[in-house]
Length: 333
Ligand code: PEP
Ligand code: MN
Image (tube, rainbow, N blue to C red):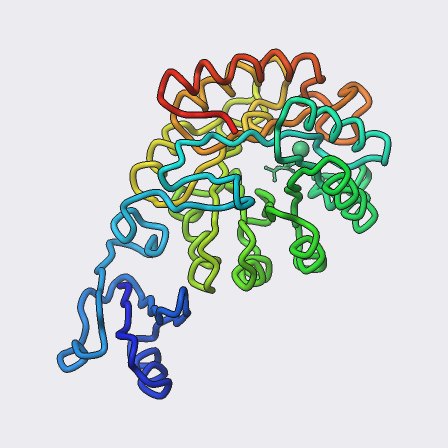
């Protein structure tokens, strides 16, 4: 149950109500909000005077639910770069899997800017499945991304993989990406709740939709309303592709949540040959953005080499995006 408390309530009463309902309390735009366990469906007799509005919820998908906020949340990546709300924008994010060197990220950033794309992606802390592979440049990589942001006037999305560097990533990123393997890390989620920066949560590849959205609830209930969900493929019995992009799940998220949705066909597919077709299919679903890995020379990429598009491949994909978006009344930004 979500309760919006009346404005004039004093601190002691708020604390007493928080304890009584075993609720999480946070403040958003000067409004005191309590979120109780979803099994509680009504306020206790006598408490009506404290409550301006209340919502009984079906499950612990609460703040993210379209039952609470029917329209899609509006998230400002920059004052003039909006997703969600009534924007009808589909944001394109691209860049390499990892920051590998200044030359590599500079070539990538220059390419991204030349197309008029506003958001550059690249990881500095890589959640690799083997300790013997490239782990990312860490802080040095963040500093290079910072340089690219000012040199090319770009916004930066980069990932956090564990809580040891979450503060650094929050400081350097314009959008904080929580990696699929980090989706359950409550240390990360709770830190991300204490900033106002947009947080993109990738779906763990073994996570149900309920678990995925509940990860978002940790950030929302800590007071950060700027959460974006990212479907990036789940593990199924199929081994011919790296993962399976769950577009049925995306339809569910569009219907039942109020969070903008970004799709990542690169990690789902695992091979560059399928990425363009999948991207167009994703855009046709009317989602809020796509995240696509590109590399100046994918053959020598230090991570995710097989799935990254080279710049020519990406350019021809990019040219086809507007027509698909336009066909369903959306705009590529
Ligand atoms: C990435 O974006 O490069 C990445 C590692 O993604 P995921 O967390 O979805 O595997
Ligand atoms: Mn990657």
